Image (cartoon, rainbow, N blue to C red; front, top):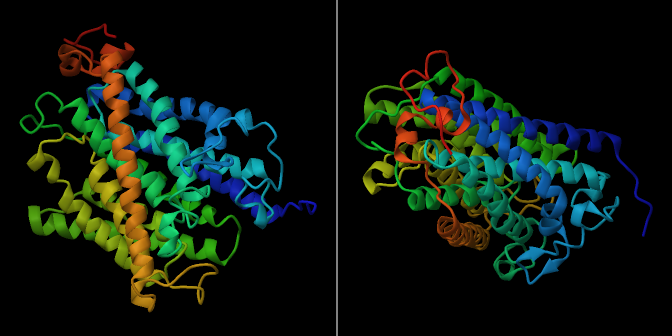
Amino acid sequence: MDTFVIDPANTAWVLLSAALVLLMTPALALFYGGMVRSKSVLNMMLMSFSALGVVGVVYLLWGYSMSFGSDVGGLVGNPLQLFGVANLADGDPSDLMAGHGVPAYAFLAFQATFAIITVALLSGAVADRLRFSAWLLLTLVWSTLVYFPLAHMVWGGGLLSGAGPIGHLATPMDFAGGSVVEIGAGVAGLVLAVVLGARKGFGKDPMRPHNLPFTMLGAGLLWFGWLGFNAGSAGAADHQAAIAWVNTTAAACTGLLGWLVVERVRDGKATSLGAVSGAVAGLVAATPSSGYVAPPGALVLGLVAGMLGAGAVGLKFRLGYDDSLDLVAVHLVGGLVGTIGIGLFATGPDLLDGARRGLFYGGGLAQLGAQTALALAALAFSAVVTAAIAVALRRVMALRVPAEHEIGGVDLALHGETAYEGIASGRLASGA
């Protein structure tokens, strides 16, 4: 094997991008924390931070190996091959950025932050009512049985990559995680919300965000970190990274505007919560597509994700599932738009090396078919396995907090603390 030569510029870019993506988890804590009621803000934020702790450990032990180890049946990487990242060496086939001169540990660091933020996203669907002990176990089991296999299937050479059956149509593309991160977490949130049941008073009592400035600050930091999420996925400080940066911001801008337009027409008012939700929906749509489309395509995908996401928010009230912080409307819808949209807007190798053309750029239906199959397969896999996990956990432990703790507030009941002075008055001071 040729001697591996580190490219300092590309390595620095990937490590910086990993740091930006790591920032997204505390940013999500702010974003989600502001959206819940004041009596559960600490629990909401702690779920993000605890996901960082749990997934950060298991990724080093078996997560990286399950994601990028040698293929086992097309579904998962060998969990023992690189257990504890033993035998990880520069130039190893598991390092998908080795061709850019990026050492294996830099690629590992970058991918670990993806796993962490994906698991943290699930907390948005279970706010106010999930026991903290159940959350900790869920983060471990879901990352192991859903996220790591999905990462392998899409990026590690498994069934949903070009090496799988979809490859007969065209090589499916997911630049930074539309299927692995967004669709996987979005549909899992829906399943968890259904299994867990609605919050007390859902659809009857007001459950307004308690601190929208928190949420707006969190969204701004998410946007900032997302530039590392998407542009860093190029694996090099090159033309594709620059295109991904531009497309990411472009989609966020039109996502923001699209959500506001729907709000204004439907409700008569454009809101700050709508603006940041639309921006995040646009960022989600850019996640799979930002490295493969030209800026006009990114503008369209962001706009569609923002408008469809705004429309999808009302589904939870019509259908009766309590997706507390709209994981479905923002992440599932946006992930589907971005992943399938590659089949329409991919610009081909005249702009980006290795990319195939979408339907609107003369590529025919093959890429659209591959992207649709990828999106639906990721959705089905995450939905089925998440449902099995949730049902199994419900058989061995109580998932919901007692009704009195939910009504009084999970911060005080579960953690014995409150975010604001005086909030404990009249509430329970103990809990499980």
